[in-house]
Amino acid sequence: MSSVRASRARVLTVREKSGVLREQVTNDLSRDGVLAAVRELAGKAKPADLDFGAPPGPVEATVPDPDLVTDDEMLDRVAALVARDKGLSSRIVYAAAAIDIDDSRVWSVAPARMLEQRLVRVRRSLTRVAWHGSRPFVSEATRAWTGGIDAQDLTDDEIAATRDNALALLTPQAFEDGERAFVLEPGVAAALIDAGVRTLLTSEAQRRPEVARRLASGQPVSERVTLVDDPTVANAYGSFRFDDRGAVANPTTLIDKGRVIGRVERGRRPGHVGRTEVIPSHLRLAGGTVAADALLDNGMILEGHTSTLVDPASDRFVIQVARAREQLGGHRTGRMFADIELVGELTKLFSTLGELSKETRSIGVRDEVDGQPRHRSIETPWLLGTGLLRQRRRPA
Image (tube, rainbow, N blue to C red; front, side, top):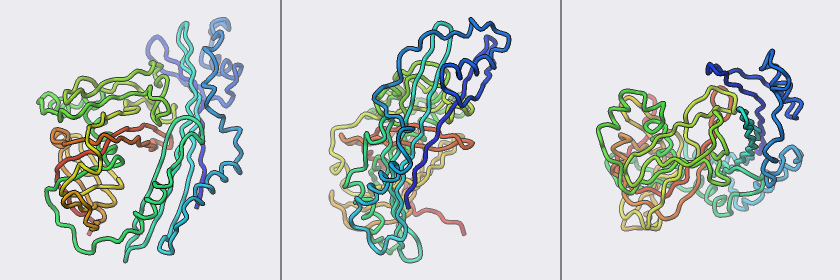
């Protein structure tokens, strides 16, 4: 199965001196169309007051216009992605490829200033499902960025790994729950970092009394952790020139060698039209000095993030992963267990993180609020830690 999806946002937001926000939706993005929408918002204001003057220059010329790419051309791109997998097996019961495009133009107008940006966010993804006994086993690969439709692509190794992970034989014996050393591959590490920042390190989260007490208790973060929220990183899936309150993008250091020194405060709207909320943009966790394949001697390598559950009141979390691979003496044993959970407390886990790999990978996240897309990304190394691993609890 293949699919292509594109979405566009068209909304004008005005903040009055009293702080009240008013919005006007328009389908006409020409200069005259925008002026007409402003007149609807401005009411009795004089036309002269509505003259924006010359715009600050064209939107980034290097970004191709998705409107100029036909549906057939997009489907050809998806078909080419599908055709690159040369080893499809009869055991694969479901195979899908998709290209998602979110294309938005945003203006921020203030006295003596008009900002403009166009954000073309692209995701290419593959899904493979194989049947193992009485249950399906899902494997996915995704590459996400901001920029040209063809600026990045899944590698041949990523495509092959997606198929091989779905076909890998599962260890039939039950997984024994307990404290174990583990390595989180970047997809799982990104889910942990994203949950930690949104639960503990935003201005909205820190208004919760229990979060404020937890941070005031002084429980240290591992000194190996340096974390920055940086929307200025070129081509990052969560990057932008200014947020939905009109504030110009700039990097914010959240954690410096284990010390919490900042928080996320920028306002963003799902699809640029939803309710304003405070969420990170592009989080960068600095890498370490050890190669990823040398991090773990004995323990489990956790791969394939499936879901994250966090209770902000208690700091408890559950991260579910598709598979856990056993490693002994620095080598994989070949045993692989499905549906494993990492459980614990966020602050405790961040304080006990071990080595970080020198290699990093950027993970794009796209979810929806009331049908509107919300984008962010996390650049992270592989993470070494210790915690409680258990087989996923299933409903009775």
